[in-house]
Image 1 (cartoon, helix red, strand yellow):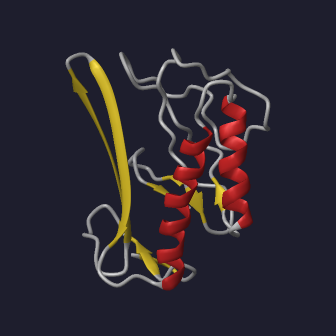
Image 2: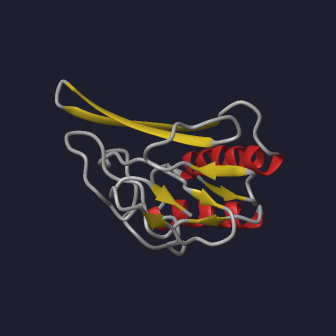
Length: 156
């Protein structure tokens, strides 16, 4: 295990189970009657540090900031910028490596739903717009991440 002193949490190795104080994120998808759905949540295991608790709460709030922006006439960049501005005002960063993605009839890897686009850019949202996920990924310190050798586990 490698300890992240900022969060008071450990980054588990592939052979070790999570334990009290860790933060876990679970991201699940499903296909039902030809439609792709996606849902994710982050939670602490047992007692977590105040910083870790605040990180989870700021991320939750960032999601609602983005949801409030998703209305016809808004551009994807407006949504992204609102999330990024909120997150950075709280002293955190949004990742640059990962984005939201399409859902609906098929899931696409990326759809320009990045969290760092300037306002006024990107596709215009309409009432008939293809659906996409908002996935604010909020980080302490830097926006950089590292994907481990298993090509699935991401650490920062």
